[in-house]
Image (tube, rainbow, N blue to C red; front, side):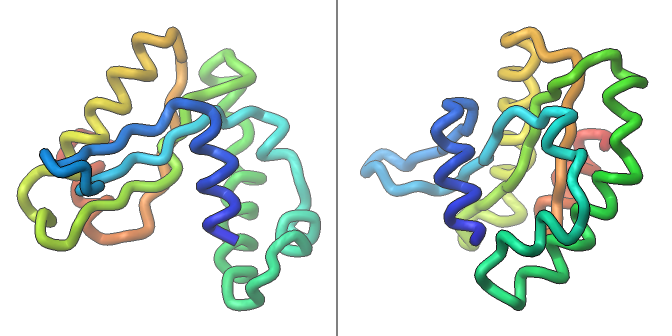
Length: 136
């Protein structure tokens, strides 16, 4: 289920990848557009689309949060925000600033593209720490 989400999102051409000099992916920020319409679904609508039954509870929690926070679009005055959807870093680079750097670059990209709002989700502890370092 996450693979489908990543594949769909990567095609928006907003994601950032950090490669070493041999082309190996060392870090990634899966970025995409988050629109008001994406947040306006019932929990049942969202969880019914998940094939992995273990992922359904997480999807339900995420959608509940979206349903409660959809007002953010009105507060920001937009129907679409830049979304940092997933951050991944090679385990050997954790604690060395890779997450913080790729998140900062994603924020800069959002600004350069004219987005007036940015939303982020972080479930991994290293990503949460990086967002806190940046000021989220």
